[in-house]
Length: 129
Image 1 (tube, rainbow, N blue to C red):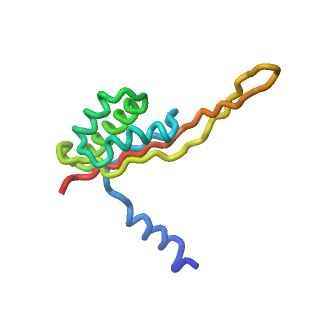
Image 2: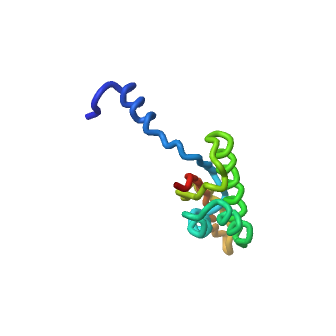
Image 3: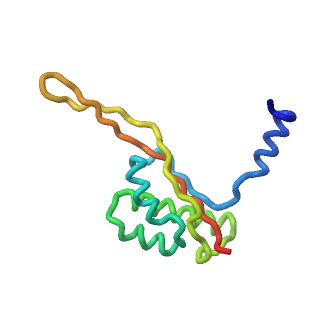
């Protein structure tokens, strides 16, 4: 059972909001597994190093994640007043989005299903201590 009135519970939950700068891309046309290869390479790095890694990574997901990281840096600079030189990637993850189902015609009247997977990619930054 919940303790207290619903509005009080909501107030307490909102008071614990994460104030770290972040950026989220929803419905990216990249499968989670392919996005995670790139995200694993930049997790925990400072933003200059991460941007350099993404610049020269040949994967398609690196261009999308690079744009997302630049957005998170701009959010930190404009909304939180943080210095971009002191930022590092605290969290980055990809969650499964909806899957588009398509049909591929095959021999003898059969049809194979093609799954076009999407993902929700999130990048959270933090300042070095």
